[in-house]
Image (cartoon, rainbow, N blue to C red):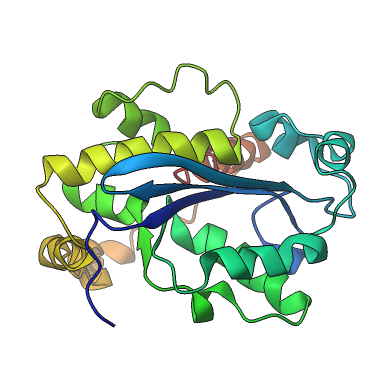
Length: 244
């Protein structure tokens, strides 16, 4: 695939969903994107709300403030199948930026396959994961969208809830600021930078075997219910920092 200059056209996309995993029955409820050309947001965008044909869990509503009734009203009752052809038409052959691309692509590929259309990963041009890009630039810092926007001086003060179109606009401005700060002018420069800063870490680098003379002295420990509950809260907090 030929290199893509970042002063050419590309899309910045985001999705909202009912949960984390489509194979567990979770569904897309919003897909939106903004177009960038010559290093500027063009004003061209799209936004689809789709009825997930299931209730939206309260914990997801707390993130994006969308109930199923809201989605049905905003999308005029459309389901994913009604907008799937438009998505393929808009994005085939295009360079696309996502923040945490595996999450969004997982849902889009799954939903497109479910309506007998090709996966986005098969028809799109180049997919750029701005979260992974940010992690190579700022490996010891938070790299969720709010943190990055603040770091690069992008206004996200009206982001009370996650919303696919608003988040796409914030991400587009942030991504442009990131690439400008790094003097990266093409996709190949981004990928080369990410590869050069990535270090493979094996389990043996961080886990050392317990000496035999010490292991026989260790006592088995049990975990009480309160500790288990705190651990689950900690895991949930990790989920909430997926980079949205």
